[in-house]
Image (tube, rainbow, N blue to C red; front, side, top):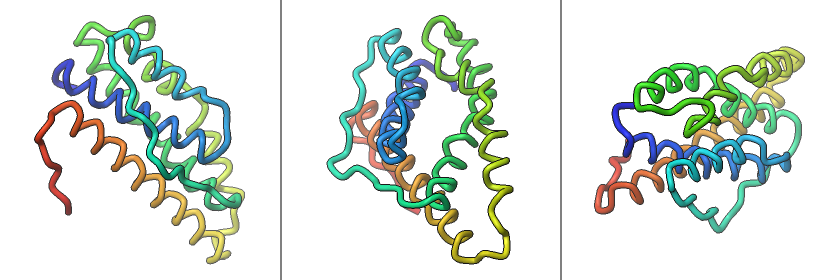
Length: 158
């Protein structure tokens, strides 16, 4: 994270992704609550939810979604170091990164994925489908955050 504006965009995008993720998986708002604390600390408004909430069906698809969110805890470790240089920490402005970086989410998801039969191509396809859907949602959330942080800036599509 090179500056506060970039971090603000990250927080808004990640908050929206976490909220949509929690709705899709019908789980408690743990990650989005941590991010809401950070948004408030920086005086930022959250992005409103998208009109169409994603729906996750079945264990395989759910595991794919969890893989994406839990995997972001690895990146949170690096981002936490960066935002500390901007003056934020687990007590102010970086609650999400501090807690997500040390959470047990990643090892838990790895153990969950290990229980799936690697020869079950249908189940493996559902895991992949879930992960791709979660990555696509994250891309849309961060794209919305970028557009609202830097009006007039259009993202290049690959």
